[in-house]
Image 1: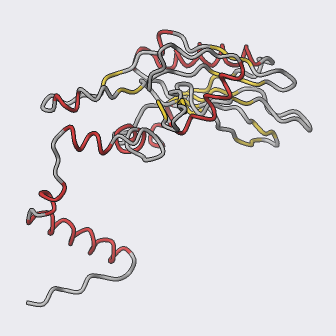
Image 2: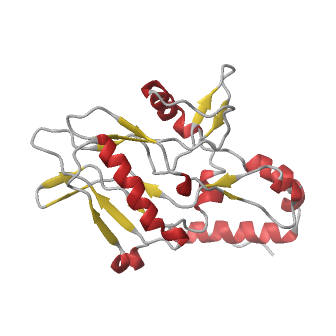
Image 3: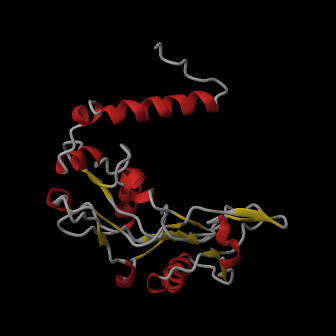
Length: 237
């Protein structure tokens, strides 16, 4: 993304003084920046913090967030990292869909200085999810994994010219591994790795028994040691 800094757009939203206005403007401008899938990297700048003020802010981590519901038995439906956020938004007055699913998108909650938290639903044109599938593994497709179309971090800010900006959301595109390696497989997120392994019939013991696995492992260990200023001792002949 750093290589595209010259293409970064700036959306000045410093004229907005209410939470409803913040959430509404962010969703409208994010839709424009999404640009039908041809994403224009853009930072959205809201008012700076006033003297002795807390500054405007958003509750959500991103423009698009999956809800996380903790059930009575302690299990979680949806994104575990959003359980507290989801409950806070419910307490604010949001009514989750029925039935609840792992793919329910949370509304945006914005708080302007000296204003109450405001809740605004994500518009339909940003709600479309894409299915994550593989042409050779129907069992994998049956897992029903999906994700939203773009990342747009909300809890960002910066200081410039003696001013502190506490609400400067940023929209970009996903890098190749973010969804599959982090969001869907981290143990504190959707933790779907074991399901994927079973769905594609991957047998770890059989993989480890292959000669090439030993070669790869030795290469990785050697690379790790050399990067630390050491090296793996050669095997005795």
